[in-house]
Amino acid sequence: MLFGCGSAPKSVSYGPEPHSNKKLLVADYLIGVDDKVQVDVWKHPDLSISVPVRPDGRISVPLIGEVLAGGRSPKDVAAEIQTRLSEYIKQPNVAVILTELRSHEYLSRVRVTGSVRTPLSLTYRQGMTVLDVVLAAGGLNDFASPNGTKLFRRR
Image (cartoon, rainbow, N blue to C red; front, side, top):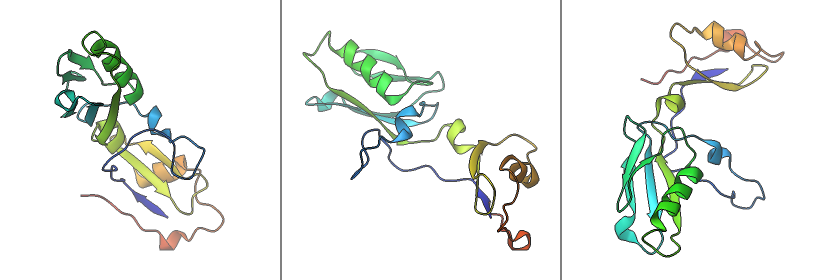
């Protein structure tokens, strides 16, 4: 059984998986404060930026100014930027890509895998113990080796 905090992927975007008809679930991710986003405006590299989301949840985009990104999906932010840029550029094509997931909501999670009934990822709460997490995962399954348990912590 493994316990620990996972690390964020270096680059994430939404769209089809290679060799699959399924969509990635990252489109459901809501951008958080301190996440780093890349805004690409096709054929307009001078308007493309890579910036962190400020504590107020906003990013500054050339030509149009402030855009609320916090609490929204990359797809929604791209649509707003595209709409606002259309006042200045004919048919802009905008993509918003998460390049670093650094928001508290993503990084402050405990992942439980291995010989538990229900592997899960849950938000860490102050005072949470390993026993709390194992119980939230439905306890040990029939194949668990309680004496062989390992605890991993990121430092």
